[in-house]
Image (cartoon, rainbow, N blue to C red):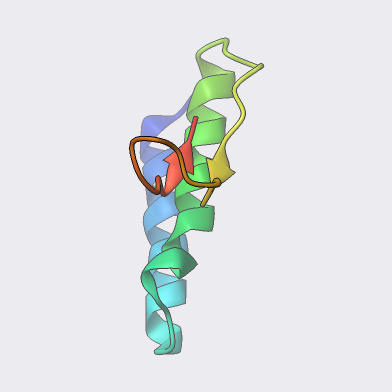
Length: 66
């Protein structure tokens, strides 16, 4: 895994979303989920699943479940 490429791609995706001018917090979840999936696969954790905005739990309303 090339860390520089991984983070450069992530920040590029964030920048593109931000420059559209209509983004909300949730708009940035997809690039983060994608980056986390890449890190998981590169570190040998192929069975990692990421859910954005999963249903509420006893602890509250999480943004992510990994």
